[in-house]
Amino acid sequence: MRTLVSHTGTRYDVSDPRWKCDSGALLDLEFTPLFTPGDRPGMWRYRAALPIENDAHIVSFDEGGTPLTRTTVAGQDIWLKQDHLFPSGSYKDRGASVLISRAVELGVDRVVEDSSGNAGAAIAAYCAKAKIGCDIYVPDSTSPAKLAQIEAYGATLHRIPGSREDTANAALKAAKGQFYASHVWNPFFFHGTKTFAYEVVDQLGREPDRVVIPTGNGTLLIGVWIGFNDLLAAGRIERIPELIAVQAENCAPLHARRNGTDFTTAPTRAEGIAIAEPARQDQMLDIIGRSGGRIVTVSEEAIGDALEQAVADGWFIEPTSASALAAIPRLEPAETVVIPLTGHGLKSH
Ligand SMILES: Cc1ncc(COP(=O)(O)O)c(C=O)c1O
Image 1: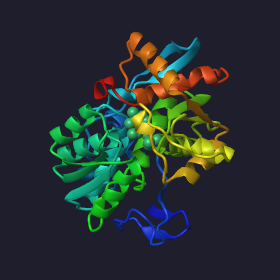
Image 2: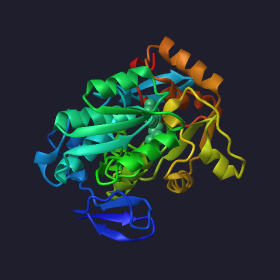
Image 3: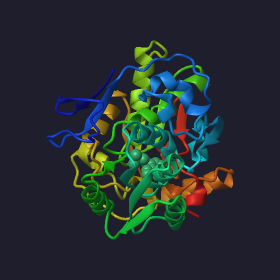
Image 4: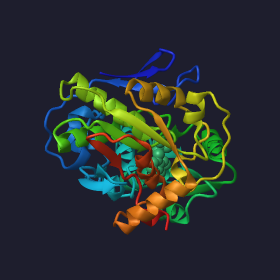
């Protein structure tokens, strides 16, 4: 059974193509995954845990199954999960594969999406594979490599002056009467990103103690939470790891909310997490608290230093991804710490 459930409790049949409640509230997807071993490569080996009815609708490049590699970061033993090695160069492909499969399932022939760049590139890639049209809205300031990538896939690119929120508003207008393939609003996206948690547990043979995640709209944070909870419910792990949300000091709305401090924003080179008004912030704060985790903010200098060190060690990642590495010196050591490398360096250099 798959049911759309709004944050105000209203329930909708899954055949409904809606992305929000009539009240305007966010939707989640209620779905009980099965962990029947699958024979597909990558993240679709968890086929029975992914909420797509018919195999014929799956849009996939056999993505996922990214390496989990042990290394040293700031003097601590860390496991890096190499999600920058996805077909479009970021972990967003996990969500895009499930969300665009969902669009195919609904018979949609054109979608609208807004993004700081990577989710737009991922949606454009999967739309190209599915031969679905797409309009991608991004802030004008988005890295040129991401803009070129989105256009190369054949998407119609809309560059919006102003903030990330101005971009979201432009997309919302365009989405009236079209399928809004929003990685923030559409809950199917999170049922792709949850496979991050499934893979980590399979690779380690147990749950990690902590996962440190660059967090803007929370699509990895929320997905990872769903994934670990699925595994807990299935008796595959004993407890939920501590989830640490990393925000740039220059744009840290979760941190301000949690501490009751004034929120101001300034530009940050971590463009993927420059989200001043994340739609799911209540949900994220709840998840962070319930996992026993917390929010860590990192300065522009710390992000720059962490990036420089990572690249000098051979990890070619983008600045947003380096923000999680920058958080390590701010955290007390834990035994098994996992950090996703979320975006490839070619996108920002
Ligand atoms: C490279 C990278 N890392 C992390 C994130 C954070 O994802 P979210 O905004 O869903 O929390 C993004 C978002 O665009 C990103 O591009």
